[in-house]
Amino acid sequence: QVQLVESGGGRVQAGGSLRLSCAASGRTFSSYTMGWFRQAPGKERAFVAAISRFGGGTYYADSVKGRFTISRDNAKNTVSLQMNSLKPEDTAVYSCAASPAGTIYTRPDLYNSWGQGTQVTVSS
Image (cartoon, rainbow, N blue to C red; front, top):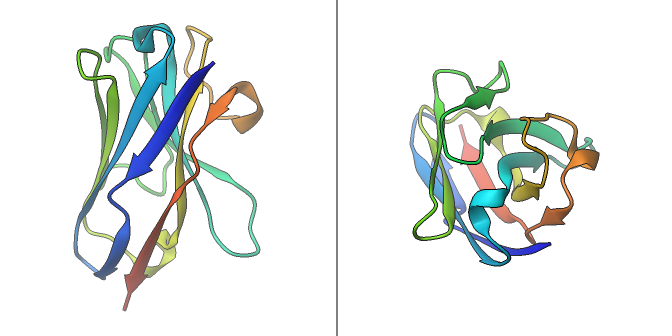
């Protein structure tokens, strides 16, 4: 498994932007497909975006497509989520996750390493 630590959360007004980062340590970072998930109060954890091992493939939830961009830097062992045009419904705890599978998955149970999460609050 890999250890993950998120940063970059905070409070922003609707229409604003935030950039989340996730730093990984442990085993070879490029061996993992990386994903971002979010969980709002009273709701289940939801898939946001994922990126393949070397960054050649990405996949987004429909709710964030065109507004969020996932990227990774394997030399720095980091994965980022650039969030633009934020909406109040984007408010949640955002967590990065790592999957040893070579395929991008949207199911959280297929990711075996998780960060502690970072709060994103979007006010109207």
